[in-house]
Amino acid sequence: MNINLKLSSGCKFEATNSLGNKAIIEGPPDMGGKNEGVRPMELILMGLASCSSLDVLHILQKGKSELKDLEVNVKAERANAIPAVFTNIHLHFKAKGDFTEEKLARAIQLSMEKYCSVTKMLESTVKITTSFEIVG
Image (cartoon, rainbow, N blue to C red; front, side, top):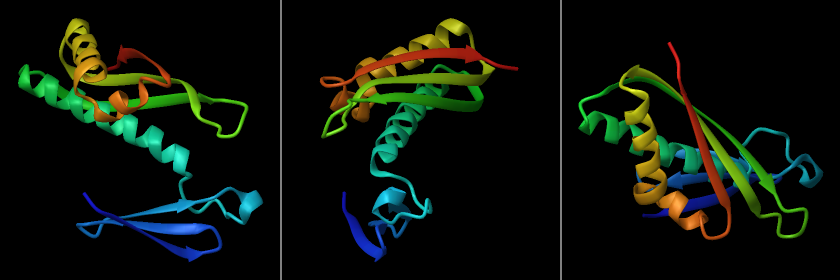
């Protein structure tokens, strides 16, 4: 896995993966940021949500359940110190599809406890909790 990060202007960077896909990362306004990119700590939360969502999708598909829609809202708290690391992260899954509450709960549990690499990297220093609802 390779990432290239290049300063584009002010405190805005362009990150490119080995396939050429790009992400814009930027510092806060007090550093000269213009709110045109994602902050580094937000990227971590995005990685956690997307990693676990891919797991949930895959687990439900393997169980012959159809996931029609999935949204994850992430709320995080950071330490009031430097470095301002995450102390608590909560993921709330909103799912729509052909599956039972038990199957969705089990898919989320398997992701958090076994499959999600981002969760595994964070769990020793951050309290990560989940909740879910079936919509539609």
